[in-house]
Amino acid sequence: MTTTAKKRLPAVEGWFTTAGGEVRLLGTRCSSCGTPYFPRNELACRNPRCTGPKDGSELTEHALSARGRVWSYADSRYKPPAPYVSPDPFVPYTVAAVELDAEKMVVLGQVAPGHTVDDLEVGMEVELTEGVLYEDDEAEYTVWMWRPVQ
Image 1 (cartoon, rainbow, N blue to C red):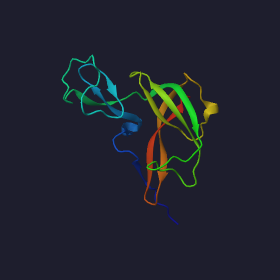
Image 2: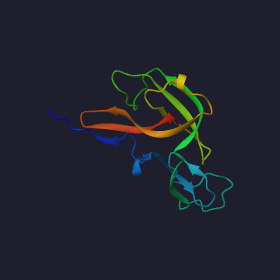
Image 3: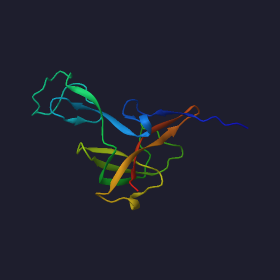
Image 4: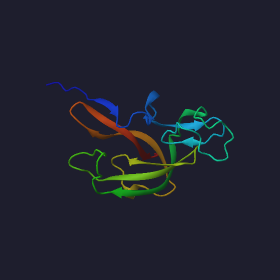
């Protein structure tokens, strides 16, 4: 009996990359004032102090920090409504709001399986990893997740 590995696809295209073996969130950054955005902002810089053009040309793709510190965290013990896709049967998971090191912005994400609220504390260092959000017969659909730095 042979088993074929399922292809891995991002659950949300363009929000993160695993290029070079490192998971990075993909956002944008204003080339005039340096303001970062996640998810991507492609309209115009929203920083009121920015003196650059306001036509979107000032925004460039930016790979955000791969590490940060826990700002807050919680358990998710209910099945979220559509369009969120969760495994069946539903498995509770932990979420963390993480302040990225360089950008000083807070990004929410699931915590990698095997880690619970008992393993987290505000201020602890975490890093990005890739995990499976759900799967079907053809593929595993992945998202970024946070895990404590060892």
